[in-house]
Amino acid sequence: MNSTVQLYDATLRDGMQGEGMSLTAREKVRVAHRLDELGIDLIEAGFPASNPKELELFGLLAQERFEHAQIVAFGMTRRRGVAAQDDENLRILAECFAPVCTLVGKTWDLHLEKVVKVGREENLAMIEESVAFLVGCGKRVIYDAEHFFDAWRANEEYALECLRVAARGGAERVVLCDTNGSSLPHQVGTAVGEVVAALGRDVEVGIHCHNDLECGVANTLAAVLNGATQVQGTMNGIGERTGNANLVSIIGNLQFKLGYDVLPGDRIEKLTATAHFVDELLNLAPDPNQPFVGRNAFAHKGGLHVAGVRADASTFEHMEPELVGNERQLIVSELAGRHTVSEKAAAVGLEVDDATAQRVIDRVKELEADGYQFEAADGSFELLLRKELGGHEPLFVLESWRTIVDQNAQGHVECEATIKIWVGGERYVRSAEGNGPVNALDAALRSVVAEFHPHLRDIELTDYKVRLLDQHHGTGATTRVLVQSTDGRRTWGTIGVAQNVIAASWQALVESFEYAEAPREPAPAADADGDPATTGRPA
Ligand SMILES: CC(=O)SCCNC(=O)CCNC(=O)[C@H](O)C(C)(C)COP(=O)(O)OP(=O)(O)OC[C@H]1O[C@@H](n2cnc3c(N)ncnc32)[C@H](O)[C@@H]1OP(=O)(O)O
Ligand SMILES: CC(=O)C(=O)O
Image (tube, rainbow, N blue to C red):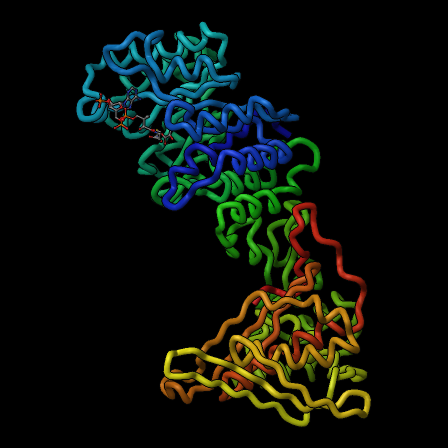
């Protein structure tokens, strides 16, 4: 095991440069703690000279204790024509509590000429003096060489000189930035190898990539393979334009594919939860297809794949999902086979023989041909399984239901539903109002069945999706309704398909309640953040 790669997270600074990304100072503190718990070495918290919120953040962070990580304050080299000690941005960094400062500076002629409008010598002085000033103030300094690879392609000697003066100023590390994300892995690998050889032992080299060519992670790994000893990236790859190199994937690859021991102990098991936490805080749905941590990263749909996974998971998985805190998903669909059914049944404590599994999968295929889709409806699949196994007790026997929707001339809409059902040999007729026909049906049904099953009062419908299946029939099309429900401890999906949207909704609603009441082991408790454990795949 090699343990010499340092993890540098830039989610709170560069990540926030992504379109739509914004967190409050307190939310950033929460993220910093999660990154610390994961085992990140350096957390680039922000640009304190940028705005009052960043300053507030550094004020808050100064009060916090971090077990492993060190907080980094980000800024830029001194302005042209201003002495380092008189530069406002550098003064703020010097006064900030953060023990480490990262300074971004120019390296590429194009930027000297067009952006900062200084000559090469003045730029070298800006870099060296800025670094030396902060080192003189007791800071550890990292130098981020902006546009390094473009600069290297334009003028290797000058690009290298920018790094040398940063090292001479006292930088502990120079970081080669592919700021425009314009480089390919072979270019990054070669350049990093040459830089590392040229700088020798003078200074450590890091890498900071962007994902414009979708090579952010590959470029980072190429850099490590050629001598970079610090990797910068953001959680889930958020960041300016198409994002930064995804630190989650970088960590997974370094640890499991390249043998670097980047996270202490078994902390890498927190990778999935940490990645999802950041998404949730940003109000983003976690990407199901994200490598390592996505819901589908270890999902198997093809029947042949599931059969292989049952025999030995490594037949279709590059690693064990649990190692990164993820889990295997077996997806029930028309592409599944008997083994998928057996495995899903075992997961909920049911045993099926081969003949039953065959019957169930035949039924799934028939239903999917009629428009059902069980991928998003694990709850309905489990009910189907229980029905095939026999012994499933319906919550009630339906006589009929009816809904009325009334709209007056002022546009006010009223909805009412009446149900007639039988429970335990008794007939119940109930009416209820609701803000829509499904809501009214839900209220009427719950008013009866919750008397017998009080737990149903806690069930919340958290999502409701309608899809037209034969769209050329317009308003007469068959509809598929997917409902997602939760009882605060687990989440499940159910499905209904019918020509009438309310009938499809009724079916999905009833299945949701029946799933909730099916006999099974107690649900796992909610996790530390209060998020319910998910059993079914969300609708
Ligand atoms: C590659 C990166 O991700 S670098 C980080 C980018 N992140 C951000 O820009 C977010 C935070 N930024 C900000 O809040 C603001 O841009 C500030 C406070 C830093 C600067 O704001 P302003 O002074 O109004 O200038 P503006 O944002 O337009 O930046 C251009 C100025 O910075 C100067 N500049 C740009 N880069 C550097 C540098 N590395 N070193 C010194 N000066 C620089 C330019 O010369 C220009 O100054 P001029 O107008 O006197 O020629
Ligand atoms: C420093 C930085 O964020 C970049 O060059 O991309």
